[in-house]
Image (cartoon, rainbow, N blue to C red):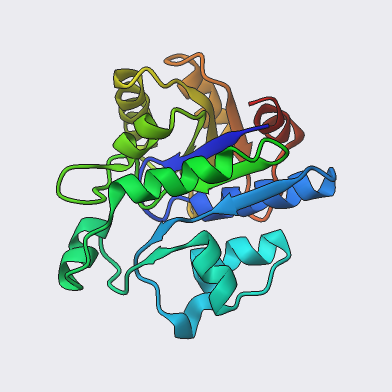
Length: 221
């Protein structure tokens, strides 16, 4: 077991839902697992329990207190914007190299799976030069690409895969997180995507848990 980066084609697609579903499924198999949300924007301590960080801590079975929040989300910004813009408002640039180092140290703990949830979409900026794609390139870990089942998702998915190919990092799997008012079924979308990519595709319906095949992929990563 090693590190797995959870990214997405965009914001609010379902990264945190998938990350938490995987954590619970891994724990149900008695697998050692940790998870990080190293960078988060739109974070306010008053609503910490329902934030992405709070949801991850809940899935890990940990309290959502100040120490636990700082342990998995050291870099937090208040404005609900891309990280570069939120950091500019606070005059507190994100230290990209330290973020990479922080994640790498956690990944070194080979006895556990380490899920690293990105922030925003794959190409969302972290500072004035780097995006989530650069973060992945620096870590060199397998990637789960979370997508929605909304209209336009095929184009967004293939664009994300093309971006990953640029850094010679293939996706471990595409995870469809069913969108509200989805115009197609998960099976229909899976069939359509398979015409364009050999990457394994796994669907998670609304309210469902992580399927066994996805858990197996993460454990073998």
